[in-house]
Length: 167
Image (cartoon, rainbow, N blue to C red; front, top):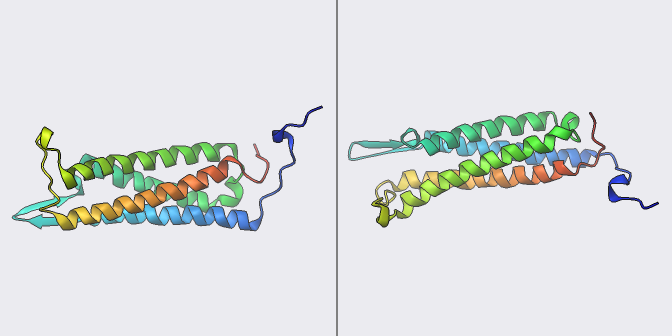
């Protein structure tokens, strides 16, 4: 009889494994919350024109997704000992990672048009006028990308837990 890899005995997760998982999730929650706060607090006024995140639907979505990601990462970190090894954890992690990546990519696309413009479409670079606003947006994108990476590692770790799945 041939033994398959999936039939091997699985060891129980150690305290260090749980600590790593909790750390990844808490760091993801912190960076995601920081990205949402930076965007929500970001505004600049020049020549009587105030620019803030509510002018752009993509930034509203970015803030909302980052807040959802913050709540999810903090909740799964708090329940890490019980949630680790559950069949649904990896699927939920994958959904949240993809939402965060999509929000970051959408905001990054709009940010690149704001930074460099698109002359063929008649869109001009507005970051020359609103430099402080654009710099804060770039910082928020970097924080959100860090959250994507941290949650991506947590998602990969939840795919192959060191404890047998429970029902």
